Structures are given as structure tokens and as C-alpha cells.
Length: 374
Image (tube, rainbow, N blue to C red):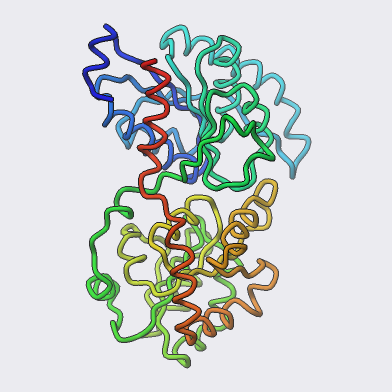
């Protein structure tokens, strides 16, 4: 598909991308938008998100316009907070209708999050092509309902026929940040960046931007075990309760600790083993860098999708899993045992490597453009 298509058809094509809420929805959405622009430079792209959510800040930073809806999800923990929900839903439908009037789309793409539903619902009622990107191995209820009328449904892994019509499914994988896919940094360079020793086995522990309480608590309570096993640690604590964990790690020469890692490509390059939550993007990144991994799924994720994400690898002998409730007692033991077993590391590396999809964003964009340009 060349940029000339825009001129042949006489007008710019318009695409709306709806969704957000977490980095796991926002980063793939931006990657898809960038890939669409790369294949059709004349295309106009508008994002639609939920007011007050992370996308309202991240999307403009990536150079795209975003409109916010007054919408919220169903609050499972405080039911009284759902009283205003029907009014918010109705209001959001009127907001979406106005957006479609001002910016009539040739196609809409939903990446998950509160704003996906009203946008795709309206598009489907008007026979505008609609696409879903389902990043998890367990589809949420809104996407399952929207899937019935969607043009195409992009999924991360096989086995999604239980949620969506099989003839609409395209296994595209999850778009991973270009900085990670195209990284050229060597292990030695990366370790010197973190001030660590290239001759030692290195563990990278990450719990997402907010941190993972069970991973942090497990490391903190067995912190001396790493040095005793001659291991070193790159520890991203996340923002929540970072101070106590940073203080805990600071006194150890074999530990680099901070609340956030900006250069994730360096962290992956330095790591021999990764310990992580099992959000869709974390799993996709670990597959692309093909590192032996121990996943600790967040048990309260909607429909327990993190466990499904991790198990899709565990069942292929491509990763290990430790339950959140077992983390305190067995996470560090599991990591130390894996670090001592080179054969097990090699096997995990070999099994996970073919699961890394490096061009997911382009696959998705090409499929959308086929429909848009007809």
C-alpha cells in the first residue's frame, strides 16, 4: 500500500482508534497508528479515550489528537459508585455521535478500555468497518460482544475461537515498542549502564509501572539470597511504596534498584532471566527478547487474564509461573534454581523464541488498509 493510494481515491482516509486505561492498551494503539501513518502518510488519525485516564496524556505526547469521553467502567469493589453509570453511558453515546459528525471515519479500531465499546458500537450500527485488537489470551466481555459484528479481530495468540468467530480472527501478536524490537545494545554495554558485573548471572525483576507488591515483598524478604547465590539484580520497584524497597536494595553492590526503568531495551539486554507480571505487553516483550522468564500473574486482573497469558507460554514449556499467593515463599527459590540450571534456561529460550512477533503493528495496519482502501 503506497501513499499514492490516498491521492488516487481523491481524499484523505480517516481512522478513529478508541481505548486506553493502561499502558497495555495505549502502547499498542500508538504503534498501530504509527504503522498506519508509515504505510499511508496522508491518513488522518483521531484517538478517543476516557477523560481522566492515562491516554489523555500519553496520546498527545506521541503526537496525536485525542477526544475524551465522560465514561467509566463498572466498579466491582464499590457498587454504590455505579449509580451514575447509565447516565455516563448515554452521555458518551452522544459524545461519540458528535465525534463521528466532525470526523466521519472510514474505519474504527478498538484496543480495549472503556471508550472502545461506545465507539465500535456506533460504527457497527452504521456499517463502518470495525477492528478489534485483543491483547490478552482471555477476551473481556465487551470485546466478545463487539466481536460478533467486527470486520477483523487481531489476537496475540492461538486458541481465541472460544471468544470470537474463527473466520474473523487474525493472529497478529501484540505490537511491541520499536525501541525494544530494534535494540542493538550488547549485554556488556547494558550491564555497564547499570553498573553491574558482566561475569555474573543477572536477574531483571519488573512489576509494571505501578509495581507488583508480591514480587517486591518476595525480593525484599530474601534480598541476601541473591549475593549468596552469586547473582545480581536489576529491580524496578514501580511507583507504589518505592521508597522502602529502594532503601532495602541500595546497600547491596550486586543490586541496581529504582522505581522506574526508562531504557527497557537496556534492562532486557542485561538480563539472563526475567521476573515479571503477565500483562499482555510484558509477555509480548519477553517473547520478542526471548529471555527465560518466571511470571507472577496479578490475580485481580479482569477475568484473571494474566494467568491465561502466562499459561499460554507455560503450556508450551516456554516460561515458568509462580502464583501470586506463593511468591513470598517460592519466587526467589524458583529464580535461584533456574539461574543454576543452564540447560533449563536454554530450553526456555528455545521454546519462547518462535513466539516473539516483531512486526505486529505492520500486520495490523496492512489488514486495516486493505479494507479502508477497498
